[in-house]
Image 1 (cartoon, helix red, strand yellow):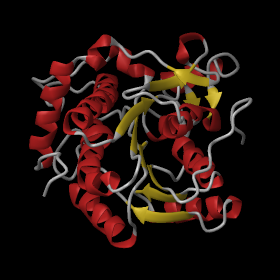
Image 2 (spheres, helix red, strand yellow):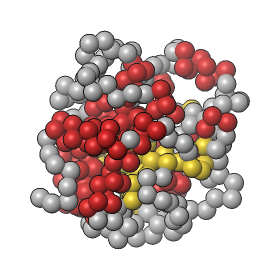
Image 3 (tube, helix red, strand yellow):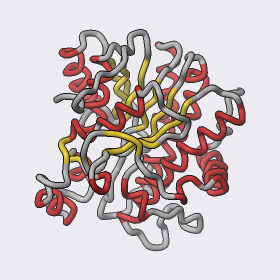
Length: 308
C-alpha cells in the first residue's frame, strides 16, 4: 500500500474526518492514509464486525486515530442515530468523505423507507447524512465534503419521472443515475455554500476502475463486469489502494477549487495517478441541480440549511 509517486499528504493533525463505507476497498484505504497523516478518522460502516476490524487495522498503522461508528445508509433512522452519536462524542467535523455505495444488484431492492437501493444508499442516504452533519461541518475552520462519483456518470441520466425504477428496473441504469446524482450533489452543494456564505468546500472524485469488493457484492464475481475486469487487469484495472488516490487528493489538496472533480489521469480516466477529471455537462447544470436538491429535501424530510 502506498501513495502515488511523489505524493505526500499534508499534516491532518487535529482534524476530524468521517469516511463512509470504510471497512473495505477504497473507503478503507482512504481512512488508513488520512489516519497516517494525523487525522482522527471515524469509520462509518453498516457491519459492526467489519467496521471494528477495519478500525483495529488502521490503529495498528496509526495508533489511536481510528474509531468505528455504525451507519446503515439504507435506513434513515440509522443515519439519524449516527449523526446524533457523532455530535455527542465529537466537536467540529473537518472532512466528510461520502464513499459508501451499492453497485448494480441483479434484482431491484429497496431501502427501509422504500427507495430503490442504489438511489437510496448512494445518494439519498448521503444527502441526509450531509444535511444532519452540516452544523458540525460549519463549526470547522475549513470544512470539506467529498462526494464519490464514477466514470459511469457519463452514461447516466436523472429520470425524474421514475427515480425509483419502479416501472422497469435496470441495474446499471439505476447505478449510473445514482452516481450522476452524487456528482450533481457536489456541484449544487458548492453553489449553496457560495450563495449562503457557508465557507464549505464541496468537491468530488471517482476511482476509475479499481479492483474492490463492490463488484462481488453487487453484480457478482461471475458477472460480465467481473470477467472484463479480470481480462483487462493489466491494462485498465488498478488495485483498490490506487482507486483511493483521487479521493485522497480531493480530501487534502490545499489548492482545491470549489466544485473540483478528481480522477485517474490515464487513458479514459480508468487508472493512473490522480488529477483533475472531466465531468459531463449534465452534471454541472444548475437547473438540474436545484431540482434534484429540492426533491432530495422532500424525500429525506427536511431543509438542507445551517439553521434549526
